Length: 328
Image (cartoon, rainbow, N blue to C red):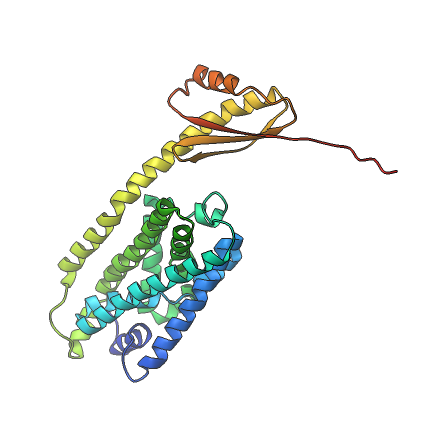
């Protein structure tokens, strides 16, 4: 089995734990970078800018105390375990608070209907947990093996931590508590994935044994205990993610069936369907075109004839008016 050297363990402690003679420097760096990352992520979500949000992912240092928690569990370092958990909780609260405050500055509500950055983070699925587990494994592997550290920027982008928290703050400020709950679930799933995969990777590389060789405490989760911890963590988030996945699949199927009928209905009056999306328990169809508008009753009749009888549909008609203004 692979194992790490004593020098690797010392490096990991230096990189992940907030103790030692340079503790004040580590803390100031963490809080400064996290504050800036929160501002960048919130600005990116408000402006609906993917590039800006990605920049926040790279800057954010929140993965450090999460992996510090893993290292503290494996090495049975109770003091640093409590310290790392406090850093994770305090950091998450800081990001939510900053986003909530910045949401007050912006004059319009920031919700899924107005931002694709929010819409993409409020319905986490089981596949998101699978991807996060794989990404967390890469991150832990890059930590254990210092010769693959150049993968860490990719890990920071792939496993989103600060952007979901920014979404939580913005949606809470906008009064969309349901959307905030969805973004919170995504954050918890990603944190769980890092913890779970980190414990496995550090177990495979026998970090516990190396810690014992340098005089560490003998009490530890052990391999069997680590497996139990991993199973519990994964199950705690897998159940709601599975439920969300089923809901997303059902919504997607309903949107597809409604879209096919709505396109035919709109085309008879030279109208175009510009969007079909699930919202508040109904499929919302938005169509634009010239007057006169197509008859809503005809759409409902066409849906019933096509067998779409169990889906509530909300129709938004936007008349399009064209006026020619010739030059003098």
